[in-house]
Image (tube, rainbow, N blue to C red; front, side, top):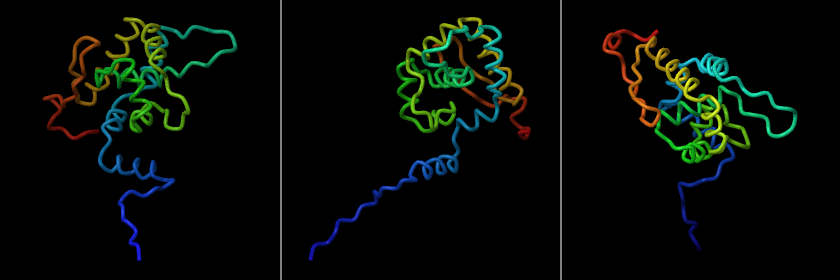
Length: 166
């Protein structure tokens, strides 16, 4: 009689859902960031400074500004190159969820990320990152970091560290 080898690895059509629930139970830091930042307002500010060019019908439609703003926040937060950002969007469930791309068959590629940054320019990037810093400060966090090539560090402000979150 042959004994079947046992394995902890099982296949399940709902594995992704189980993984999402476990990530939520463990505490997804991107959900925490999302709870402190109004990305729709940031996207509106970026569009006001660097309006999306009007293009005739045809071709691939652009990704929403809010999605691209979220991608730039991740890129800066984790100090990623355009190539690494594309890879992480393809690979990481939490990044896709944060950017609203969970069920999207395509994610922005490195060229799309670069093009968006190029379109918004320095003025749009400044509005975006100043807006993030202001919103975080209102919630009692300080965004640490310098140039666009350096990483942000979030920490509680010393003036609000003892207060409860609202």
